[in-house]
Image 1 (cartoon, rainbow, N blue to C red):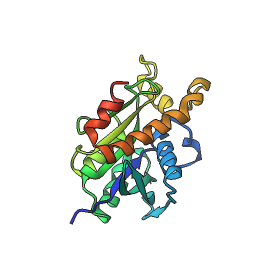
Image 2 (tube, helix red, strand yellow; image 1 turned 90 degrees about the vertical axis):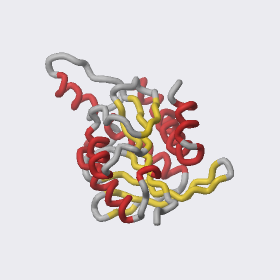
Image 3 (cartoon, rainbow, N blue to C red; image 1 turned 45 degrees about the horizontal axis):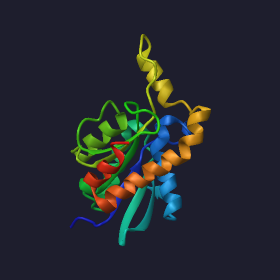
Image 4 (cartoon, rainbow, N blue to C red; image 1 turned 45 degrees about the vertical axis):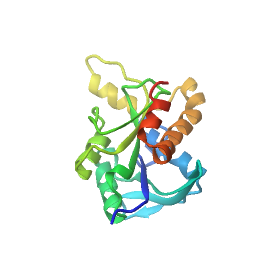
Length: 199
């Protein structure tokens, strides 16, 4: 019997040195949701920080779990699959929030299925859930310089912090990411795409 709970997962890397880096956009958006809906996190099998909440929007009350995997980005799927199996949450009730280098900073795209676009966290979740058919909130962080050291540049970029301009816009951007996750749950993917993808 599938659960009527939703699972919202913010992707990132645990530990002090990764806080406030581009790769931790998902964690930061999850923190916004936690504050918004008074969700308290506790440890789930050493794989994730997990909290439970209820959102009431547009006259609907929806119960959800909010997760921040502790597995490091490349093994995010282990945490997501464990929570989904434990609470019997189907992939169509999973929403993943993550950083995306193919989008400019401040842009959000919402989709379900399709390619992982080189994002190791998404690759890991696809593999562990056995399907890419779950919703994603892609939060743009812009792109590193291409060129001879493209791989190193990319790693340094996603694990780097935000400049002063981006920092000023960051909270509003994170709130938009949180809004997009709520919108998917309450109004469905198609309506959320109409609202966010054209911006």
